[in-house]
Length: 341
Image: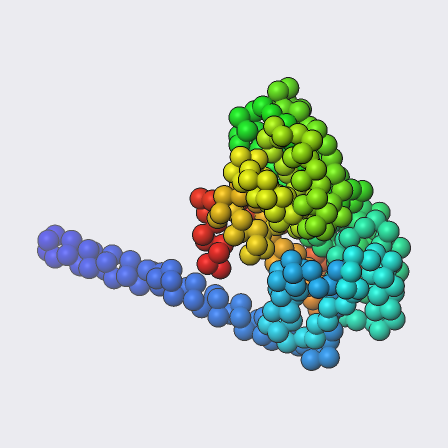
């Protein structure tokens, strides 16, 4: 009887454990994912709901290939209308004029490239008009924008400085260039200088304004190489700095000898890294600027995550205030992964 009781107890215990066993984790995850998809799909969207991006230099390849491409993909995924507006050239007054014209059309949301502090009042007008407004790329601190997504430019400068120190062995002459006067660029310059000042054997021989122009960057670099034949390295801070610097260095027969670090990762930049003309790219995650910026606007419009009974009435927003999207470090070791993208 004792042996029979033991057998029965063991059998019951095994049955209880089997009955209590959870389904495999994979199945649970699949169901949860399906529930999320159903919840997302159930959000009612007016097909005429329009989100507008306003930038400047609207045809710049970097903007077209990253910012605008991601924004358009987001619109297609959400089933809403998206528009990209702004002047063809780098023209901040024209961008301001475009923002003010868009405000009058009352879009569902406004996504603005933070090109210059001069757009502050236009942003504030949009917010005052009740339009959800998100700034991306470079913040406009004096504005009332609802959120900002972008890169920490001080970190871009630090990344370039730290890499340049390694490339030139902590000594030699360097220079840097970009668009002088822009808030984000100046932050980047400072990040670079704060790293370099720790190395007394590194001499900074100049700060130059290439006006985001390849030809200007090439001319400045050519003049630098003539004035300083022993130049060790150059750092670039706008999308056209790298190609311009690389062009001049190649023409001088100093590719690989004069080290180059710069920002952005267009196909031309990546190719120059593979060739060994540019040693490092500080890449921004630009696709994240506009995909998540647009989603933040959508979340405001649809009260996706309500924080109170009436968020607007008590002056709060249901989206993050500031997002640092981070950096990608691209060198010859990993550039192949980006060329295959």
